[in-house]
Image (cartoon, rainbow, N blue to C red; front, side, top):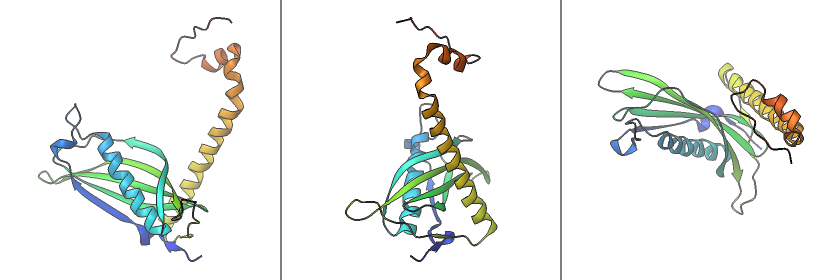
Length: 185
């Protein structure tokens, strides 16, 4: 299966933030930005895979700075990693105030997408051709995030049985901002 370079599926969405996108605090609603990010992740992943792609998870969603109504938001996405049937799309969001000439990095996140065949089964994804040091860095970072997530699943599996042991729970929660108030049954 022939691969595609990162640049092949790199895409940008630019949109004016209108008053209808505002939350109760007067800033652009995070859900509006998430919806735009999901659309961009779909475009990048589907272009690379050559198939319909669905969102499986979103990692490291960081709302670094608020987006104001009236700003122009540009979402830049690229496929950072591919597995056998999945892809990780990295997205960077920048908001620009056209009148002031200011721009700010507002969001970063990573969407894991899975490619689907027309019959709904998972489809194999073409390899990703890494052509720059930045491509390699992003791919390696995605591998590291995956390993950390897998370690977290292993951690939860290991400690899941301790959640029913009140002494183990008390040890795990010591120093946390909670009050343990379990009745002995």
